[in-house]
Image (cartoon, rainbow, N blue to C red):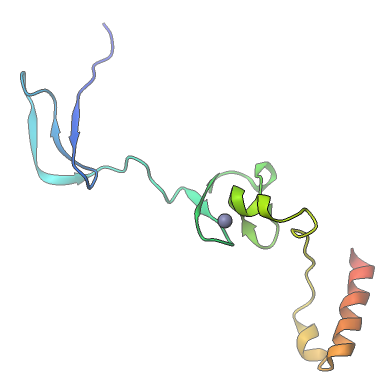
Length: 118
Ligand SMILES: [Zn+2]
């Protein structure tokens, strides 16, 4: 015996309205059943443009493309936009902003932090 295929009639809202053939026992569905044909929330959103990416939320970060550590997932388009240099970031301690109120001093501290840590 092969597989049995049962045709589904699906309306524009992805509701299944009918199951089976017209001839031979079809079943009209009285209450709308939401059928998630293409569930969208299993994919990451792009942190830049907000579009759905093709990266599954369940994919480990080590196996992702376009994942920016400390920031999140980029879609392919956003990832390809920047040069590799444009995608490089550094993180500075948050307190630097308040601790060094003088912009020149802040700049010097950030530069120092960069050379010490990167
Ligand atoms: Zn994007």
